[in-house]
Image 1 (tube, helix red, strand yellow):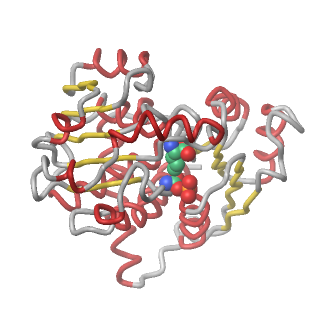
Image 2: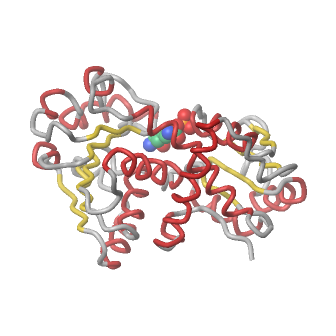
Length: 305
Ligand code: CP
Ligand code: NVA
């Protein structure tokens, strides 16, 4: 049976910990300059329906470092769900490639891709979630704080794909997760219900940024208008401005609180230059770890195949 990586909700805590252990091993090899061709001759198709810098570069480079090859299919190439049915693409690509990574709009398309592909499918972001990002994020927190549980993680901004994946993580690892969003922009309610029902984490939803950052170990933000919401950007800017992560807000946080952002950042909107470039920011360590964690995810899915 093939396994996909579509949501953190599909993984047990033990499986998540195993991915992190392998991440550490693979990252150490990169740092020592040791070749680690554990997937020689294997190929990955990368299907992008939206733009990307980190996801494309980290997956493509990571696959090469593993001894394989990744091919990039741009939004103009496949037209998934438009030029061709999702299930047909899933079946065709499975005949050529050993693993598929996709960045799509509809999460239902990701699920359909996984259902019909006969090779593992990795979710590189949908409108609903971004599991590889949050795996890399918590791994980065662990590197900086020495632990990845029992921390107060405050996410400030839109209750979007990033927020939903944080909630899915909190269903697996014990955290105090605070999602601070303006009214009407809260994260997915069924994801929240599911995570709370696991009884593992304390998950709060609040519209009050000053309260939310107090005592936080991590302050995390993301764009106010995600890919596909460009026409809402001006209206959202007005609504979200009180949620900007700036020096005034950071004055209410602990001095050693880490600042994170999945990037790309809209500097001057959700985060100011002095905060993202400041001493508490770990955004580039976070970006780097995308590659190390994703290599571990690929290797895990390809094991025994
Ligand atoms: N964080 C992230 O996924 O970046 P890209 O959109 O550039 O891939
Ligand atoms: N919420 C953002 C994340 C980008 C990595 C988006 O979907 O555009």
